[in-house]
Length: 224
Image (cartoon, rainbow, N blue to C red):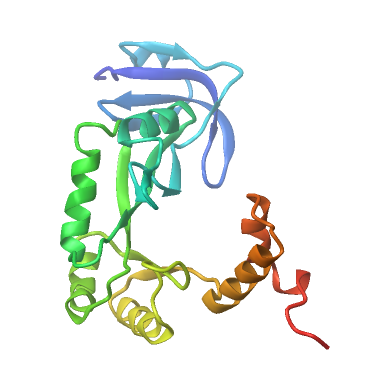
Protein backbone atom coordinates (compact mmCIF):
# COMPACT_ATOMS: atom_id res chain seq x y z
CA UNK A 1 0.00 0.00 0.00
CA UNK A 2 1.31 3.43 -0.91
CA UNK A 3 2.32 5.44 2.12
CA UNK A 4 0.60 8.68 3.12
CA UNK A 5 2.55 11.90 3.54
CA UNK A 6 1.36 12.28 7.11
CA UNK A 7 -0.67 10.25 9.57
CA UNK A 8 -2.04 11.95 12.68
CA UNK A 9 -2.50 9.26 15.29
CA UNK A 10 -4.53 8.73 18.47
CA UNK A 11 -6.57 11.91 18.13
CA UNK A 12 -10.25 12.40 18.87
CA UNK A 13 -11.84 13.40 15.56
CA UNK A 14 -14.80 15.77 15.51
CA UNK A 15 -17.01 15.82 12.42
CA UNK A 16 -20.37 17.46 11.71
CA UNK A 17 -22.14 14.38 13.08
CA UNK A 18 -19.76 12.33 15.24
CA UNK A 19 -16.92 12.39 17.78
CA UNK A 20 -14.65 9.35 17.73
CA UNK A 21 -11.04 8.25 18.15
CA UNK A 22 -9.15 7.31 14.99
CA UNK A 23 -6.07 8.01 12.92
CA UNK A 24 -6.22 10.54 10.11
CA UNK A 25 -4.07 10.30 6.97
CA UNK A 26 -3.12 13.25 4.78
CA UNK A 27 -1.86 13.09 1.20
CA UNK A 28 -0.71 16.39 -0.24
CA UNK A 29 -3.13 18.95 1.18
CA UNK A 30 -6.17 16.66 1.49
CA UNK A 31 -7.50 14.15 4.01
CA UNK A 32 -6.97 10.78 2.34
CA UNK A 33 -8.23 8.33 4.96
CA UNK A 34 -9.71 8.08 8.44
CA UNK A 35 -9.52 4.81 10.32
CA UNK A 36 -7.87 2.73 13.02
CA UNK A 37 -4.17 1.79 13.00
CA UNK A 38 -3.00 3.90 10.05
CA UNK A 39 0.41 4.65 11.62
CA UNK A 40 2.31 1.96 9.62
CA UNK A 41 1.22 3.69 6.41
CA UNK A 42 2.57 7.16 7.23
CA UNK A 43 5.86 8.58 5.99
CA UNK A 44 5.55 11.01 8.88
CA UNK A 45 3.64 10.60 12.11
CA UNK A 46 2.13 13.16 14.45
CA UNK A 47 0.86 12.07 17.86
CA UNK A 48 -2.43 13.80 18.72
CA UNK A 49 -3.15 11.75 21.83
CA UNK A 50 -5.39 13.66 24.21
CA UNK A 51 -6.26 16.25 21.55
CA UNK A 52 -9.27 16.96 19.35
CA UNK A 53 -9.01 17.19 15.56
CA UNK A 54 -11.52 19.66 14.15
CA UNK A 55 -12.27 20.59 10.56
CA UNK A 56 -10.90 24.03 9.71
CA UNK A 57 -13.15 26.84 10.86
CA UNK A 58 -14.75 29.34 8.49
CA UNK A 59 -15.02 32.98 9.59
CA UNK A 60 -17.75 34.47 7.43
CA UNK A 61 -17.36 38.09 8.59
CA UNK A 62 -13.96 39.77 8.39
CA UNK A 63 -12.73 43.27 7.49
CA UNK A 64 -9.10 43.18 6.34
CA UNK A 65 -7.20 46.13 4.82
CA UNK A 66 -10.51 48.01 4.70
CA UNK A 67 -10.69 51.82 4.49
CA UNK A 68 -13.43 53.36 6.60
CA UNK A 69 -13.93 56.97 7.63
CA UNK A 70 -10.36 58.03 6.94
CA UNK A 71 -8.74 55.06 8.67
CA UNK A 72 -7.85 51.53 7.58
CA UNK A 73 -8.44 48.38 9.61
CA UNK A 74 -5.29 47.37 11.48
CA UNK A 75 -4.96 43.86 10.01
CA UNK A 76 -4.19 43.23 6.36
CA UNK A 77 -4.56 39.90 4.55
CA UNK A 78 -1.25 38.65 5.94
CA UNK A 79 -1.58 39.48 9.62
CA UNK A 80 -5.30 38.73 9.66
CA UNK A 81 -5.04 35.31 8.02
CA UNK A 82 -1.99 34.31 10.09
CA UNK A 83 -4.00 35.10 13.22
CA UNK A 84 -6.94 33.13 11.82
CA UNK A 85 -4.75 30.10 11.05
CA UNK A 86 -3.28 30.15 14.57
CA UNK A 87 -6.83 29.87 15.91
CA UNK A 88 -7.84 27.00 13.62
CA UNK A 89 -9.70 29.09 11.03
CA UNK A 90 -8.74 27.99 7.52
CA UNK A 91 -11.17 30.05 5.44
CA UNK A 92 -12.40 33.63 5.70
CA UNK A 93 -15.06 35.53 3.80
CA UNK A 94 -14.05 39.18 3.76
CA UNK A 95 -16.21 42.16 2.82
CA UNK A 96 -15.18 43.76 -0.47
CA UNK A 97 -16.53 47.30 -0.28
CA UNK A 98 -17.62 48.97 -3.49
CA UNK A 99 -16.63 52.62 -3.92
CA UNK A 100 -18.97 55.04 -5.74
CA UNK A 101 -18.61 54.65 -9.48
CA UNK A 102 -17.00 51.21 -9.33
CA UNK A 103 -18.47 48.14 -10.96
CA UNK A 104 -18.77 44.98 -8.87
CA UNK A 105 -16.09 43.36 -11.00
CA UNK A 106 -13.71 46.24 -10.24
CA UNK A 107 -14.47 45.94 -6.54
CA UNK A 108 -13.65 42.24 -6.46
CA UNK A 109 -10.46 42.80 -8.48
CA UNK A 110 -9.29 45.44 -5.95
CA UNK A 111 -9.87 43.05 -3.04
CA UNK A 112 -8.08 40.21 -4.81
CA UNK A 113 -5.05 42.47 -5.22
CA UNK A 114 -5.17 43.23 -1.49
CA UNK A 115 -5.08 39.49 -0.72
CA UNK A 116 -2.72 38.26 -3.44
CA UNK A 117 0.60 37.10 -2.06
CA UNK A 118 -0.48 37.83 1.52
CA UNK A 119 -3.28 35.45 2.51
CA UNK A 120 -2.05 32.20 4.05
CA UNK A 121 -5.48 30.53 4.15
CA UNK A 122 -8.43 30.25 1.78
CA UNK A 123 -10.60 33.30 1.27
CA UNK A 124 -13.61 34.60 -0.61
CA UNK A 125 -15.66 37.80 -0.56
CA UNK A 126 -19.05 39.20 0.22
CA UNK A 127 -19.58 42.27 -1.98
CA UNK A 128 -20.76 45.38 -0.14
CA UNK A 129 -22.81 47.45 -2.58
CA UNK A 130 -23.36 51.16 -1.97
CA UNK A 131 -23.78 52.46 -5.55
CA UNK A 132 -26.62 50.36 -6.95
CA UNK A 133 -26.93 51.75 -10.46
CA UNK A 134 -28.77 49.84 -13.19
CA UNK A 135 -25.45 48.54 -14.54
CA UNK A 136 -24.60 47.22 -11.08
CA UNK A 137 -27.97 45.46 -10.78
CA UNK A 138 -27.21 43.82 -14.10
CA UNK A 139 -23.86 42.54 -12.80
CA UNK A 140 -25.41 40.59 -9.94
CA UNK A 141 -26.27 37.41 -11.91
CA UNK A 142 -22.79 37.23 -13.39
CA UNK A 143 -21.08 37.75 -10.03
CA UNK A 144 -23.18 34.93 -8.56
CA UNK A 145 -22.15 32.63 -11.43
CA UNK A 146 -18.51 33.54 -10.83
CA UNK A 147 -18.68 32.40 -7.21
CA UNK A 148 -19.67 35.56 -5.32
CA UNK A 149 -23.26 34.78 -4.28
CA UNK A 150 -23.51 37.07 -1.25
CA UNK A 151 -23.96 40.83 -1.16
CA UNK A 152 -24.23 43.29 1.70
CA UNK A 153 -26.42 46.37 1.75
CA UNK A 154 -26.71 49.01 4.46
CA UNK A 155 -29.86 50.81 5.56
CA UNK A 156 -27.90 53.44 7.50
CA UNK A 157 -24.62 55.41 7.33
CA UNK A 158 -24.39 58.13 4.71
CA UNK A 159 -22.30 57.03 1.77
CA UNK A 160 -23.24 53.38 2.30
CA UNK A 161 -26.99 53.23 2.82
CA UNK A 162 -29.51 52.45 0.12
CA UNK A 163 -33.17 53.41 -0.03
CA UNK A 164 -35.85 50.81 0.66
CA UNK A 165 -36.84 50.57 -3.00
CA UNK A 166 -33.26 49.78 -3.98
CA UNK A 167 -33.03 47.18 -1.21
CA UNK A 168 -36.22 45.45 -2.35
CA UNK A 169 -35.02 45.40 -5.94
CA UNK A 170 -31.66 43.94 -4.87
CA UNK A 171 -33.35 41.26 -2.74
CA UNK A 172 -35.50 40.22 -5.69
CA UNK A 173 -32.67 40.22 -8.22
CA UNK A 174 -30.41 38.21 -5.94
CA UNK A 175 -33.08 35.66 -5.02
CA UNK A 176 -33.95 35.04 -8.66
CA UNK A 177 -30.35 34.06 -9.41
CA UNK A 178 -29.62 31.95 -6.33
CA UNK A 179 -27.72 34.50 -4.26
CA UNK A 180 -28.27 36.06 -0.85
CA UNK A 181 -28.28 39.57 0.60
CA UNK A 182 -26.87 40.36 4.05
CA UNK A 183 -28.59 43.49 5.36
CA UNK A 184 -27.14 45.87 7.94
CA UNK A 185 -30.64 46.59 9.15
CA UNK A 186 -31.04 49.75 11.24
CA UNK A 187 -33.51 52.59 10.91
CA UNK A 188 -31.42 55.51 9.66
CA UNK A 189 -33.84 58.28 10.58
CA UNK A 190 -34.48 57.00 14.09
CA UNK A 191 -30.74 56.77 14.67
CA UNK A 192 -30.30 60.34 13.45
CA UNK A 193 -33.02 61.48 15.86
CA UNK A 194 -31.36 59.74 18.82
CA UNK A 195 -27.86 60.93 17.89
CA UNK A 196 -29.09 64.53 17.81
CA UNK A 197 -30.77 64.04 21.19
CA UNK A 198 -27.62 62.58 22.76
CA UNK A 199 -25.40 65.33 21.33
CA UNK A 200 -27.73 67.95 22.76
CA UNK A 201 -27.30 66.31 26.16
CA UNK A 202 -23.50 66.32 25.75
CA UNK A 203 -23.33 62.54 25.69
CA UNK A 204 -20.42 61.86 23.33
CA UNK A 205 -18.51 58.99 25.02
CA UNK A 206 -18.09 55.80 22.95
CA UNK A 207 -20.85 54.00 24.89
CA UNK A 208 -23.42 56.33 23.38
CA UNK A 209 -22.80 54.94 19.92
CA UNK A 210 -24.50 51.75 21.11
CA UNK A 211 -27.15 53.64 23.01
CA UNK A 212 -28.09 55.61 19.89
CA UNK A 213 -29.32 52.40 18.28
CA UNK A 214 -31.00 50.48 21.14
CA UNK A 215 -33.21 47.45 21.03
CA UNK A 216 -36.74 48.76 20.46
CA UNK A 217 -38.04 47.83 23.91
CA UNK A 218 -35.10 49.51 25.70
CA UNK A 219 -35.75 53.08 24.67
CA UNK A 220 -38.87 55.20 24.89
CA UNK A 221 -38.79 57.29 21.71
CA UNK A 222 -42.18 58.90 21.80
CA UNK A 223 -44.30 60.46 24.54
CA UNK A 224 -47.38 58.73 25.82
